[in-house]
Length: 213
Image 1 (cartoon, rainbow, N blue to C red):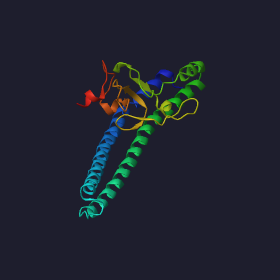
Image 2: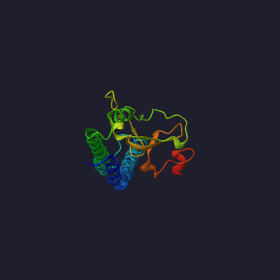
Image 3: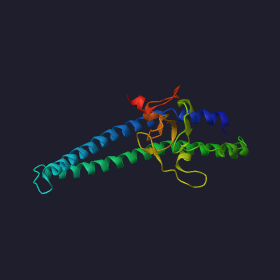
Image 4: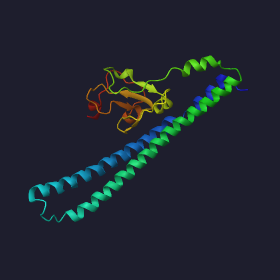
């Protein structure tokens, strides 16, 4: 019969590779987001040129570039859809990596409860406190007030309501360590640590515009 300390030590050791695995997934996400942005920019550029020609010459004038542009635009839309699908797959992969460790921890805790090594009331008191979801508008606070949200809480709350709100540059749901932007006009509001290159809570305020300069 393994004691609680040994189980905890083994579990913590099993998490050694998790940060690197998650970082790798997010690096792929950022790469695909960059490609997606480039593709959408190409679509917008060609569409703008077509509209500019119509505005200048009228809708009945023949545009020799039109026959060339439309297949390109259609192809770029297909690429954009594919990249979005690939981003969804990567997000699911990251969530599964985290969820796998959470399920294992739950199993280990259940075994320790059965063996009588962990009182049931301790488990209940810990699981009764839920980490909050990011609010629709984070209050004015320093970067040190960033919060860690459990993957399970980011997917569903105790009353069964789903939080499908997306945040961050990667435009995915909230999970793991997240930090609030102190810029009141920030459209993304919250950011995953990995997406902004954080490994610990920063000191002072966090402004995404300043970080991007």
